[in-house]
Amino acid sequence: MLTKQTILVLTDFSKRAERAAELALGLALNNNENLLLYNSVTRPEAVTTPLNQEKRTTAEEDMEHKMEQSNTKLIKLLTQLKSRLKPAQQSQIHIDYKKGMGSVTETILNLVATYNISMVVMGNRVNKELISAFFDSSVPCVINNCECPVLLVP
View (cartoon, rainbow, N blue to C red):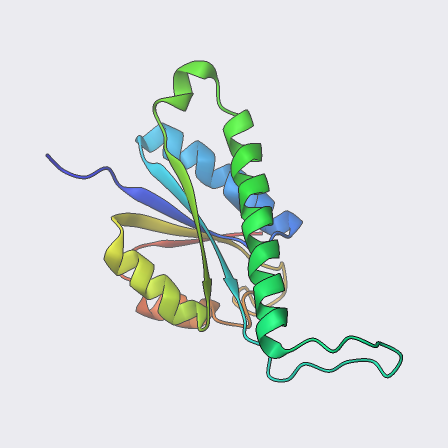
């Protein structure tokens, strides 16, 4: 028996990313696939503390805080998507989430290789250059190296 395929949804929690997640939910329902929501937290180069702030935060504390925020927002997005499902659809689709840290492109390629990913869906700014900016301009690298289709949603 073949494993059910999954649509990977990249999110930065922007309105564009929310639209991309909603579109991916429709695609998953129409194609009998699951959804995997993903957010990557970037490691800060240096953590600066304002002079008037008594408590200094370390890079580790900053990362821990960012990872907690990512987790909270992923759960909120997952809940929001599940609330759009009719009762009969709730058993049809499994929606999960994963957060990570580091190079978005490398992480995405690892997720595609690890999970049965059929497509990557992500939001994109509407500019003259379609692949200009999202996830620190990693879109071209994802498109050029991904082994499955990548759908950019304006």
